[in-house]
Image (cartoon, rainbow, N blue to C red; front, side, top):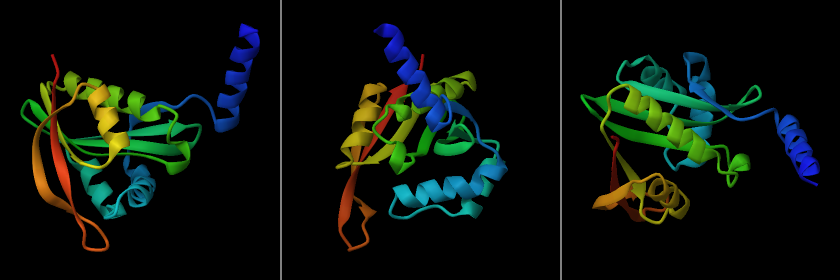
Length: 167
């Protein structure tokens, strides 16, 4: 029975394009990263914004690739021994599979490897999936920004400031 389950899992991975891999993003990924960001957030970043971030030495960008398809990314900006996670996104069709956990932990490991000791982020207060991810990864709420996110209809939503120390 266990062999059947393992075989089924391998077939499923092969059908989807293989095991997801987290790796450094490159300039050639800019258009796909912009597409993923635009599908995930109200105000998406354009291809030019990703090209600029990918060329900055203080910005770390990882892509999540399955087979030949980029299905997610994480972007952070570093200063001294601190970093801010600017964005994480997973393709809508791939959500709910736990992929963001591996992406986030790998990204945090690379930040630690670059000497980052404290990581900050902002998350929309009502974004429960993102909050669960960050809390699972050890981030704690350290503040709140009232009416920080502007929605298409004019509604303003609060942001939570979160922090995690790496040691």
